[in-house]
Figure 1 (tube, one colour):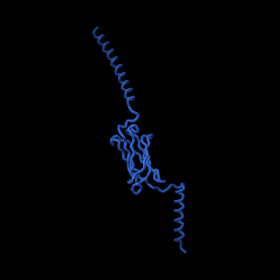
Figure 2: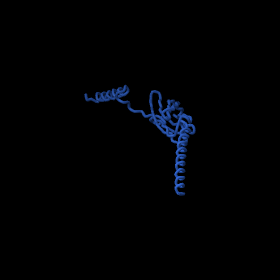
Figure 3: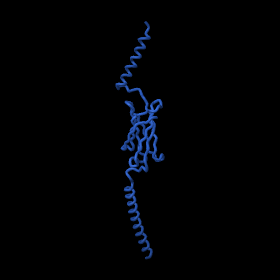
Figure 4: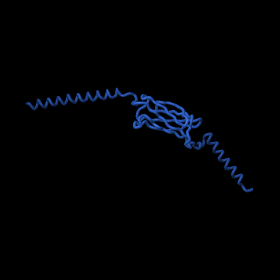
Length: 164
């Protein structure tokens, strides 16, 4: 008879402990979800870098747009030496957010570079942007002008070098 009471008592204790554990676990999940801020940046995020042309020379006066996490946007203009920097508040960024830096200069652009907010850098991310100048695509107005100029140059060479 004593074993049945002990067995029943242990069974009730296990049920009560399992119930308490599930309630505490559920409560912990609810508290954890409610205590997290919208963003978890622990300080300001400084995004900086240098803007250069295809020769590596600094580009002064270029318009820079920096987007963090796809929603937060700040703009600035490059200073002497092609340097730019913007600072995001802690509520504007989170670890592992994507950073997109877009640069326009006069009618040239955009030049785009991407990065990620890596927590190992303690809120400072350097993203350098270099303009690369490419031959315009054929089909565009500038591409058509390049094609016409190339054909004209070849025609002039053939006419000039032609035996008389």
